[in-house]
Image 1 (cartoon, rainbow, N blue to C red):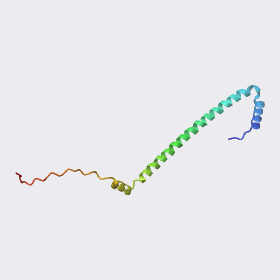
Image 2: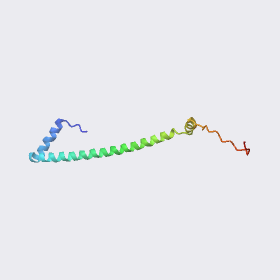
Image 3: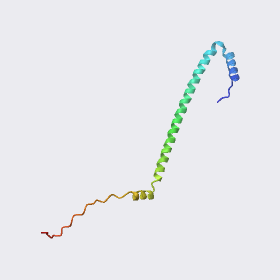
Image 4: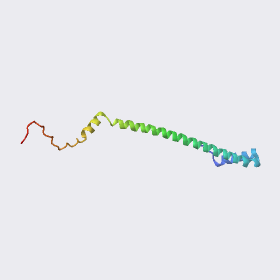
Length: 106
């Protein structure tokens, strides 16, 4: 993020030593490190939350796209073709009962 090399860090340390003095420098350095950790943790948490929300939105969009594609395959022609392609149920082999004519066989 920042292009800070070793020489720049050394210069900042020397200036801090001159401004704060040797007694207060360790205490200020600890506090600065603590604040830096808190800020990094907060930023990482915010990044993770944003990424999770974006992934959720993307997932919703993909599901909607999937549903629209599935509906696109069900055109009237494809439905008719699939219905006609199905085999007809097998006819039963029973013979119809004879119709009574009123005659009596002896």
